[in-house]
View: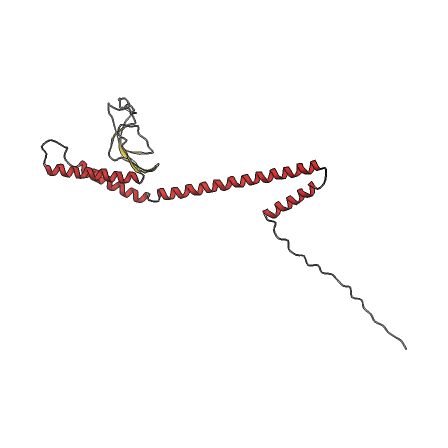
Length: 212
């Protein structure tokens, strides 16, 4: 009798699951670096360990100061942007308002010059226009809108628009002979340039004295 024994050994394969490592964040990197410093501080003499820890402390303090400075700059820039938005959001409306102010001044200028014995109606009309204009300009100034008269001052292309040139004997070249409209400013920003006549290169006058 023949016994037949069949035994097949199957090789067993261990399959190892590799877990995905999470991405290192800045905090993880700093923690790893701090741990490495602590391990390094754990070796050597006490003086060396203290020196290594002090160096790490100084480095972390420097990082904190830089981060705080960046945050302060960001807050300051954000504050300026909010202020600019608040101050200049009404710029288009302000241009329309100063156009009304100029029309009011044109109406006042269209009245005949003041003279003795003039009609009482003309006097009351002029006084009404003048009072309204003063009140209107006061309201504009309280809201940051100012009017500048460039007459006889140096021509500034940033604030004035030259409509024509003229030869004069009372001003030097490149000065404002006459302003048809004033310069209007909104805070420190140009709202509307003045329309002016400018003395040409043949003008022979002297610049006006500056008033204190």
